Image (tube, rainbow, N blue to C red; front, top):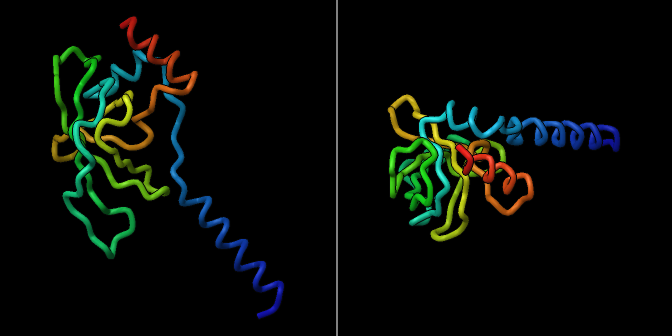
Length: 142
């Protein structure tokens, strides 16, 4: 293989890796995010994420469930605990995986086709970054 062919291969591989990465839009203001979601929580995982289905032949197909202890329910549903589905995070599919008692997290959940609450890494965030703290303050005013 010539040096040129090798560089071409590496360039194509690098381009593919960039194209397969998860890309999220910036969160809107707190009122808009709560209004669009079917569930909006400040919560801590009550258990590790559990695999509920997986197809080893299908990239990014591992389905996960995580039970959360709710600190605050911004939709005023008074939920104390909620189970939310997601895809297992593999870097490219915007999936998630949680460990018991880590967090807390701000979570915006949406009903999937089966009517179950689900999320992606784009709809969940930790509260340790300065922009997350500001967003949390905005949420607490609602």
